[in-house]
Every structure is written in structure tokens, then in C-alpha cells.
Length: 260
Length: 260
DNA sequence: GAGTGGTCTAGACCACGTA
DNA sequence: ACGTGGTCTAGACCACTCG
Image 1 (cartoon, each protein chain N blue to C red):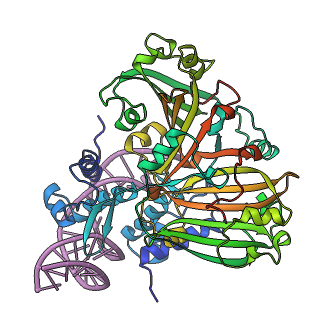
Image 2 (cartoon, helix red, strand yellow):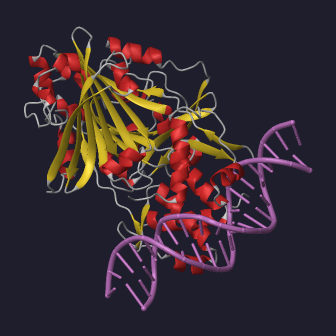
Image 3 (cartoon, rainbow over the protein chains, first blue to last red):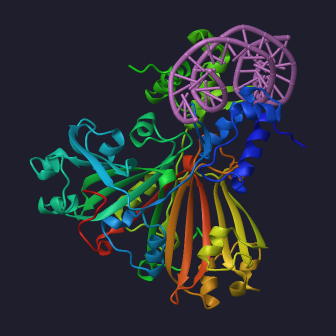
């Protein structure tokens, strides 16, 4: 029988207490010194155990204060919301009611720049990699806590001189503006990647260790199959649920390979 | 000017080499002993730096062999595939062609059990938390590498005695069977959560450290608004892209709050 | 000032993989 | 046999938070 190393046993012991609810979200764990006593190991070993829990996203350690059980509070992220602002099914309605965001102050920062986009974006826009795009970068916050990076890229040639280049909110939406400019989108391709954040994302979103992100890449496409917009949303995993709904009308076949 | 601690400097240095491509996926890093020499620090400090990179999902360390730069290879996960087996837009077609899975052997394990489901599932099925469900648990693998946990829950009262209770593949799909039993689904609610895996998931999917998962929860609903099926898919972040497509016909409004 | 976590050292022994 | 990473110890000093 394989026996786990000491630090792993301590990790499992503490994780068990969290999963069983003996340690509730927000609770403070025993101090490192206390755990050294309790388990009869060196501080290094205790710290290895705590570090593992931190990287699982279960606890955070705050210098000078202690270690605490984390809590997740999920905002609802609806990729469909852009085109279908209102939920259409009773289940979705109920789901959204149950997850109603508390009355915290929303705020956002916007900055607009001209830049050659990352290779991933250039590829999706079918541009040369040194072609210039307009980038609208936003960080959205709720009650001071950032919860959402939203970077939109438009080919400069398509939006030159339009209000998309001014760093202010556009109430009627970027899609409307693109349509007015003659670049009406009729299709979109959505991709979602799951990964650990870059140090830059950790900084911009104030992420704790062990917090993964979802990267939602949206490519908007015209009837002529021309991509005119790429949006990259970065969502902290501990603050979001991605939700959508489907109806019979969208279900073209009855069987599928995924869910037998 | 804030100066980073020594281990953080080493982390940044090594991450830079990876991002700049000086260390390519699959490459071996300098050994810990070599890094101790190179940076003039203790082995503990070097290991702290390597541990950080591992938890970012950038490297893996293998006992007795060394540390290596990781690679991500993305399978395509289409939540829509269940109802729309074939891609409908040229962009999606191209996307899937570009990501064609290599010709590795697919395989799967299936086991079927009667069990009281986790509270999350019971709630979605609108069952008492001690009501029994049929669980079809599957792990799908490609070339020996597991890439997909797929657990389907059906209320026992609805599927008793049907072939859903036998641990074999159902070629025509579970949806068809449910329809034949008089529980035709007309809507679905999809939720995706992003988090670090549990130890059980790490084991079943053979995940390395720093690998987050996406949890896709699908609730299938009849015309009478009765939930008849909950599917929980667990996808390793380093092996999947979640992809779907949208068309004008689904775009009911022109503006949205997400993408100005 | 007392207690907390953050950083770091210099060693030691072990299990593992490869040659 | 040797080099690799995995585990663990016993200390030390620091920065931070809080009463």
C-alpha cells in the first residue's frame, strides 16, 4: 500500500476539514506554528501542505494575519447575452434569480490604443501580423473587485475615425457602430480556453494563487465571411459561471457523441 | 521600487525564456543543482521558483529525470455537438480542420451505478437529496491519455429497467432512449465552472499540477419543465478548447452589455 | 511587542530513471 | 553508479498586522 509523504497527509487532513465543513469559508486555519506542534513536523513541511491547498484554490495566506478558507462567489457570464439580452427559458430565469448579484457598485476603466495585436488575434482577423488594430481595453469591477478583462480588437482600416476610437462607453454597442460602418456581423465563432493566468492577468484581476481563468475569444464575422472584430474576455474562475441555454429549435439532431 | 524576492526573480527569468521560445515545449530545463550554481542560491529557493512555474502549468518535474516545458494540445469540445453534430459555418469548419485530432486510438470505460447523487445534481433534478439516481460514469481516452470525465445522472424512477442501466455504449444516444421512455427533452441549461481539480479528478484524468479543469453541467428539460437528465463533464484545461458558433438567426438583438 | 506568514540557508537521506 | 527530483530538518531573519 502506497503511503503518502507527510506533507501530503497534512494537506489531505486539512482539505477534509474544509470539505466536511468543519472549516467554513472565511474561517482562519491554525497557524503554521500550531500545525508544526500538532503534526510534529518542521515548518517547511507544514508550509508545503499549505502551499498545496493554496494552489488548489482552497485557502489564501495573508502575511501577518493568517491562512483562511476561500470563498467563491459566482457572477453569471452569458456569452449569448450580447445577442440575446434576456433569458428565454424559465430555468434560466430561476438560475439567474438565484445568483442575483449583490448590490455592489459596478465600475469600469476603458483605454483605447493603436497596436499590432497578438499573433492569435491577427490570425483570427486574417491580418498580417504587423497590421495595426484598434484595441479597446476594459477592466470591469464590482464593488472594487475586478471581475472581467474585456479587450476588443478592430482592424484599423475598418473603424478609422469612428467613435470606436474614443475611450468612452458606447451605449448603443460596438456592434451597432460596426453595422453603421457597413460591417454587419451575421456569424460568430466562440472559443473558450482554460488555463492558469499570466502574471499580468494576476495583477490586473488581483487573482490569488490557484485561481484559473477562462479565456473567451469571440470572432465576429460578416455575411461576406470577413472577420471584423475579435473580443478577448478573461474571466477569473473563482468569480464566474458561464451559462447558456438551448431550445428544441436549435437541436437539429437527436443523438450525439457526447452524452450517451 | 518594489524588488521581487529572489525566488520570484528566478521564476520570471525562466518564464521569460519559455515565453520567448528559448525553451520550447518538451525541452528540459537546467537541473536544480545547476540552477543553484547559476543563481547562487540554496536549493530550496530554486525549488520554490520551479514550483511556481509548475503551478502555472508551464513545466512539469519528473522524479529522476528532470523538469520539462509542457505542451498543450487542444481537443475540440463542442457543447452543441450533442444536438448539432455537424459544424454549420465555414469558420467552424476551418477551425476544426486546423485542430484535427491526430489518429490516436479512442477508448472509454463505462460503469453504471445506483447512487444518491451529489447535492448539486439532486438540486438540478429537483429531487430529494436521498432519492436514487442511475449514474453512468465514463472516462474517455485518446491514445491512452484520459481527456474527459462524463457522468450522466437520470432519476431512477424514469429509467428503471431500461438499457440506460446496462454498462454498455448506447449507439443511438441516451436522448433517444429518454424520448422513447416518454421523457423528450426540449430545452437544456448549460453551466460551465472553472476551478482547480479535486484529488480524485487529478487521479482519474492523470492531471499534472497547475492544470485547471472546466466543469460543464448540462441539465436536460422536457416540455413540461421537468429535468430528466444531468450530465457533468470534466475537461482538463490543457487538453481542450470549448467551441461553438452563432448565426444571425440566433441573434435577437443588436446591442449587448458585454462587448461595447 | 507578540504573533503571523514570507524568505532563505545548509545540510541530509531517499526514490527514481538511465546507462 | 550516478544524476535527477522528492522529502524533511532546524534553524535564522524579515515584513506585516494587530492590539
